[in-house]
Length: 296
Image (cartoon, rainbow, N blue to C red; front, side, top):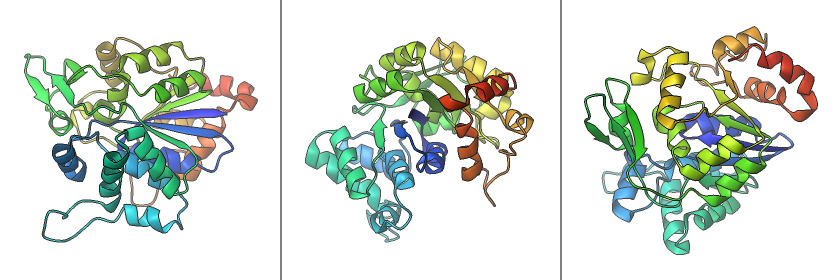
């Protein structure tokens, strides 16, 4: 069973953490357009792809008792240039310098943390996110896109880059493709802007499932209803990127109580999320047909 998970931020790492013990081959395709915080500073200094979400995903797939996994999430609290940086980001940045290849750097990082599943940047070339407003203004960078006051008329990448071919191949081979949860504009959509990933998502035989957020994003996306958000996204992308959309209401309709949240968070309960995904395995096709009628 090949499962591909696409996205970024905390949403993707939550999904990976939920699924890592399943008897399947997991591939994470990670958004690399973040330009804020520790990641943004390293990008500016080193001209590298965004590494923070990659670090978070690898840590989520590692065993909880892995000391290096815990250490990689540790942030420096000093009052110098290290302040705010996570150890894992710096380690990944150093590995990128050493290997001169982002894929190789992430593979080494995975090996160091004992992670067997694949974590792939959406592209190995540094690139930024650009939004165009209805009035024609250009908004540069993921942080500024997150701060928009109205839904953009268009979303694009700052330059034409080649998708990670390992990611493209994984999509073609996937039995199940999970997109989200997470910020629609800045976590889910950036990989989908890449031509080869677009083609793979349109042609793959795998079932494409979009997982909605449990709580509001606290972004411009919240101005629209769920169906309007997805309609706008598909207008921008030029294609439908999912077969099934799992909403909180759909979870409730399935009587799986998957909308229950982790205590004191707005994230999906990991064990229940795993239970949801298990319903879509090939050996439960009859149940899948029933469930598909309850979602849009």
